[in-house]
Image 1: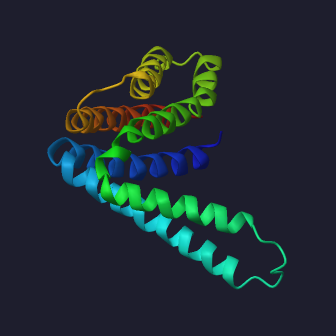
Image 2: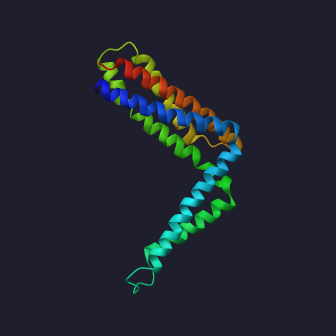
Image 3: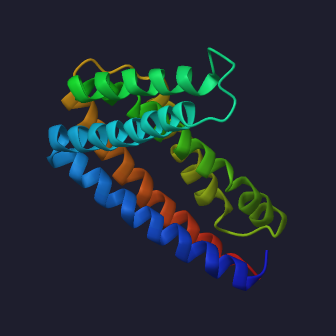
Length: 180
């Protein structure tokens, strides 16, 4: 990896991590509002998908088929949007799984950097490896840890996302400064 690529990666990571820090802090202090906003966004998206699918179904040219995949897909999206609108906290159970998966995938992308640091026998390899392990662990905790109370879960998620984002900034900074 060149110095320019490391610089671009650093700034991309910094911006995304800062956004995640904001998201984590908001989750920590306003968990109910955050879950409701996320649920409303999901409702809007699935409702749009449902309406678009119904439009495609009713304006299709070949009307010989009685059942079309668009109508089934649209009806499922419509049912999901209604359920998420009525029960906004139901979606909260999926948030840790999605966030944990994202965190682990993001951490796995750092393996190439770790290999390069190890190959160069860099002094920061041990610290970066430890941060990588903590980052992976945080993602796995989010995926596997079933939390009972939705609001507590959101606050825990806020703490984990904030902590993860700070670690992500640190490890990216270390990588950027150790690329030759």
